[in-house]
Image 1 (cartoon, helix red, strand yellow):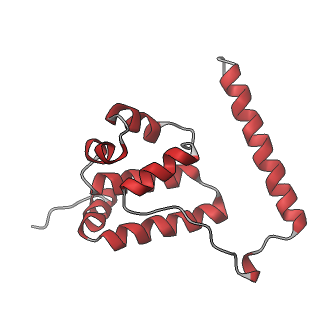
Image 2 (image 1 turned 180 degrees about the vertical axis):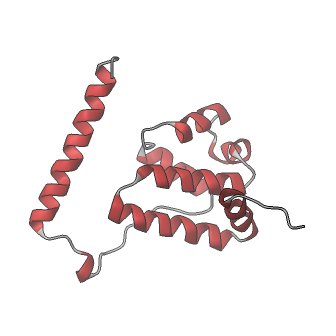
Image 3 (image 1 turned 30 degrees about the horizontal axis):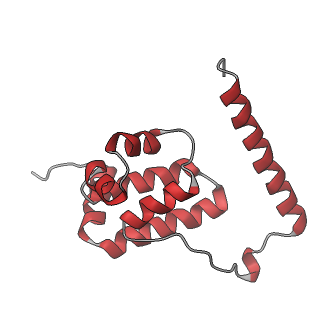
Length: 135
């Protein structure tokens, strides 16, 4: 009888078998992030790739970040700082890059203003929750 596995186990097995597939997976998740802004999905994807490449201890060696610190970064509800994220991606064999949007992907000025205001409000909420321990 064939052993049943969960989706994450299957994903990690696939990602560990093919580096290009792992990079493609991260690219797809980052593209989704551009649309939906779900940073938790990005962190979860990075965690899966880290697990596929030997786990936190192995990747921590490549980043010069203590394993405990790397685990804490990956389990935090907050998105990692950009420089930390870039360091982790480099250890996974890829990098963050910028590319131009296609015309159909461009956001009209009014939508961009609304999106920018939304980001400002989320940042203010984070600052408030950090300064008020009751949150």
